[in-house]
Image (cartoon, rainbow, N blue to C red; front, side, top):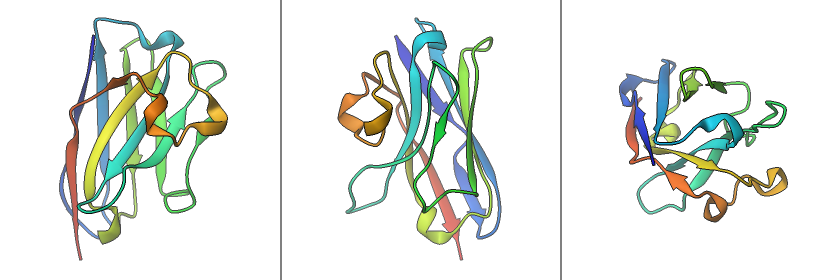
Length: 125
């Protein structure tokens, strides 16, 4: 049972990246999934979540309108499209999944059961 994140890299401010998170050993169909990030010296921050029940999505104000989470259950993969990137988006990005995701507390990283290894996103100014 694992998640494999990919797609990070170096991009200039204003650019775009798409992160992918592929699941293996289990089906994402019944899991809420999300993306978190952690910059050096900062706490892990939730940047998006998509529910399994109805596909509802959630974002903090800092990324709303710039980031889009999506999922393709047929490919057992979910994505984070990041546009208009800013230097403050620089961080290691982690994908996560939880079978019993409580949507009202989607930002609480402690409720997620399965984590990917992280992929580094660096946005230069």
